[in-house]
Length: 193
Ligand SMILES: Cc1cc2nc3c(=O)[nH]c(=O)nc-3n(C[C@H](O)[C@H](O)[C@H](O)COP(=O)(O)O)c2cc1C
Image (tube, rainbow, N blue to C red):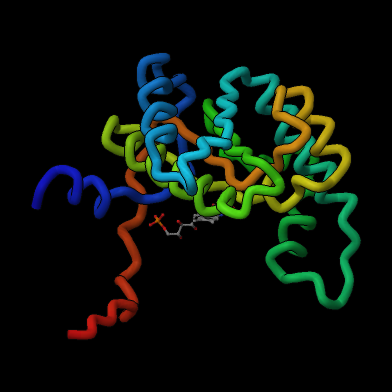
């Protein structure tokens, strides 16, 4: 199997990180890989905001926590959201796995390709990270809360344009320990000849 395929197949989501920051060169390479993802009509309308300042990451985490606490729980609230709200009640709750680097991928609200464009860029970044020995995990709280006023204020502080929303975000860092092996693949491949 060639190295690209091996890299794709061996990547796993990493949720435990060493404290040490990834290097500037590694970060730049990962962001560059994101920027070369295919994107609808070649618009490149995304923005990759990399946050490495631990205070700023703490602020993002606290904004997620506070915003979750403001979400009303009703009968229809999805059990996963209920579990996040429960977690948010702990003032030390960390939604970003204590990772040293956090990347927010935002894109135009009104670009119909923004979600697939952003997801492809994130996929590129996760694979690039893995090829450099850096672990990553998609964390979905921020995208889900992107319309909430407190989160919008935070995005403005991070220079994320007003006409953007968050489509995805990832944590990155050197892995601490081995991840569990991949789940067996489901029967999803269907070839018609
Ligand atoms: C759209 C999306 C949202 C995800 N959200 C989260 C999340 O909020 N927290 C988390 O720990 N993992 C999250 N993940 C990671 C998945 O749980 C993980 O990719 C999946 O279990 C397969 O494991 P693997 O990445 O190790 O192959 C997300 C992945 C995707 C693609």
